[in-house]
Image (cartoon, rainbow, N blue to C red; front, side):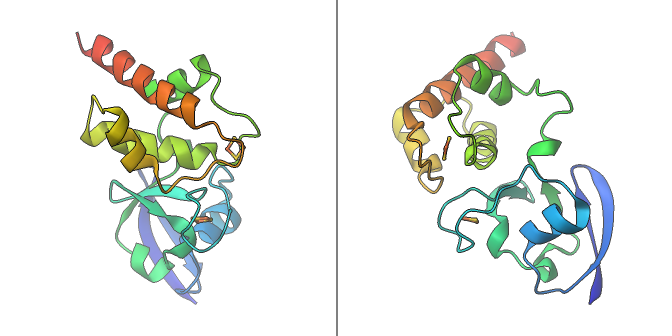
Length: 157
Ligand code: FES
Ligand code: FES
């Protein structure tokens, strides 16, 4: 066991865990934030996506030893009241079906729009390719990302 210090959703966090424990388990079981989901456990589905120093990252495959000193953002950290443009767009477009993949989808979409405020279809497909949705919500995800881009642009005017 080792005490790992990092920033989680903007707040200092210090937890005593096995350094080889994946971040996903620390987030869900040690800290108790359940919004980040377990899908494949092999960095292949995107359900567990969080931001690691601002980059979308599969938390199922990131050991806590690598998290020390870093900044992690989970779905709970992107807004306090689901008012982030991506969350609003997701609701307006009624993207979710079963919902299981959606926090990972949203975290990838937030990262995409931060780097590219007006993505093309090809940009969206490239950025979201690692996030699998068994319910096939891909067309609505694409629409919601475009709507979020519009919402962000009009808020900036
Ligand atoms: S659970 Fe991490 S990528 Fe599938
Ligand atoms: S909404 Fe069901 S897996 Fe994506």
